[in-house]
Length: 291
Ligand code: GUN
Picture 1: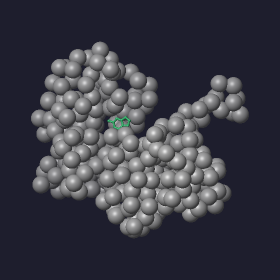
Picture 2 (picture 1 turned 30 degrees about the vertical axis):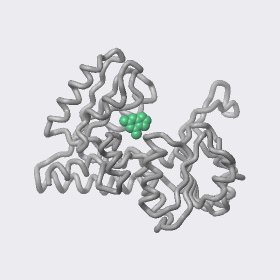
Picture 3 (picture 1 turned 45 degrees about the vertical axis):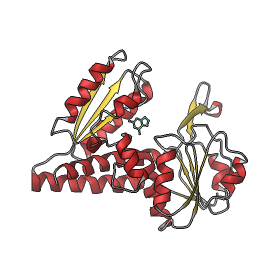
């Protein structure tokens, strides 16, 4: 292995420390405690794990955490009424509705009912528009975490060729906007892209966010490239024993690490940064709300 490992846990710890220090200051100086409300509808096991972890880390940095767990068959009207209440609650500075929502709920409608100033996910259409036009916005947490690690590792990204594999609203599209904002030449690739290996081979920066286990092998990677693996996929691991599983990214780590200049591991790369950025966004929302 020749690639340097980009340690997402260490980056995230630094972000959390800075957030915690700032929270202490605004509590002491202004008597304000930032508050994050997380709404979970239903009992999706992965979502439950994420929500628990978000709540725990929110409290650890000194913020207030408000968890709202609703039954899977909650009506749209009930959910919208809760969001309206949170929008009007001065103690709540950030609101996150955990996705995916049960099928009977209109995700776009729900997300766009959140006050854009409290939309710490950056998914509201007005934040999407602000980001797309280079204006001050709430920036989606996962791409923001990726950008922070890229800047931390590479310094300036200006002029670099970047390929984002995946075109989701949560990661791929905002990631491309952020890289463009840092003056990269950006390609968004996806499942229909022709000659995907050749497209990836041109890139100085590869951000893989497709949700397919180990889809990007090392021989697609340009020697020395920086690889950010957003994927979290659980696969069978018979080598660990019968019925055992392990987490892998969208990049085949062992082969990619032989070629890349630097790479994020899974787990321990992008994942920890996503929650750290959520806390940073909540603090930002609180500071903006209080001038
Ligand atoms: N589900 C998976 N990732 C996310 C995220 O970043 N925000 C929300 N709200 N739901 C998610």
